Amino acid sequence: MTEKTYFILSIIVFAAVYGLIIWDRFDRAVVALSGAMLMVLLRILDQQDAFKAIDFNTIGLLVGMMIIVSVIRRTGIFEYMGVRMVKLSGAEPFRLLIILSITTGILSALLDNVTTILLILPVILSVTGDLKLNPVPFIITSVFASNVGGTATLIGDPPNIMIGSQTELNFIDFLINNGIIILPMLVLFSFVFAWKYHKSLLTQDILKQKVLAMDENKCIKDRRLLKKCMIVFGLVIAGFFLHGALGFESSTIALTGAVVLMFVSGIDSELVLIEVEWKTIFFFSGLFILVGGIEATGVITMLARKVIEATGGNLFLTVMAILWVSAIASAFIDNIPFVAAMIPLIIQVGEMSSMDISPLWWALSLGACLGGNGTMVGASANVVAMGMAERNGYKITFGYYFRNVFPVMLLTVAISMIYIMIVYL
Image: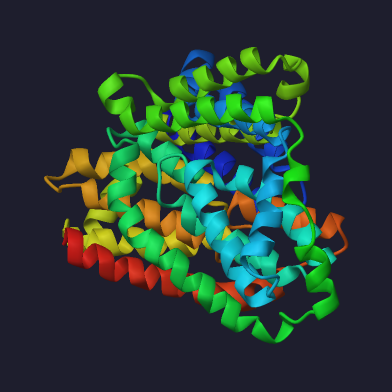
């Protein structure tokens, strides 16, 4: 086959996979892996190049953090945190929603937003059940906060992990450049959602007193393991801050912490490894191969030329285009495959022009991470949360989520635009 044929085939396979992911009728991991295998079977990529296309730094970081959280979960610390948050709020739903939102955002910056949602939603369902509250406002607010908070750090949101892995940007870079705008944004929009839902945040005094009487200390199941976990987790976080100076990739630090924690905990490794979100890991792997396919055939290079032509190589126009296109696209297409496609495009833009592309990375990060809040399929954390809510009898429709969240998402992107204009342009 000719180069043109491979070029067209790669676009068809890539577009078909995206279409099926948006349609959301089939398992996304299976769809991504099927597309990846088609890239190989059609000889768009050979087998060796397909494996080289997988970003094992991203994969290793996710696996390592999932293992660490799996062990920590066994201590009962997350249930303890839930009761503490209720007491801190005085069992007042308005304050409770704000505290849960800010806590979710901070946890998402230190862990990743999917893991945080998996941990925080059971707490939300338990607390709202005790107070006889509708959990939907808490779920939506926490999902929003997880994506906002995750934007602040290298490990908080998969798009940032992917960007950091393909550039020289480290944990400190993300914290300084994104964190400075994300923290006030997290607090601001926690209050926005509390005000938005204030009419439904009502409960009875007798229920408040019942919850306030709970003893949070009884939630801790294994204090000895908790101490070990906190030491190892603290060292891992320190390692993320220092990984540039240490000369180790973030995946190496996360996997080292995971191995150490499994060793010192004495928990059967099979019980821990079975809790890793392997479906997410294989979904990532398939996407990396797909993007490798369209990159190998020159599709990315062609798109990069189009971007330069459309913006005339103007830095301001290019940054604004990437920010808003990333935000809108990530609302309707999972931001993981979108960013996987955009990273090589930005690299090509830099190679083909004299433009300083460093602001483009922050535009992509802020646009994709915050844009993922736009719809219930915009980010993996959203999909996980909606699935958990439905399994517990609270179905959140696409339309309901869109009406309540999309306009707020646009506000976060507008704030990011002003921030980028002031700081970088």
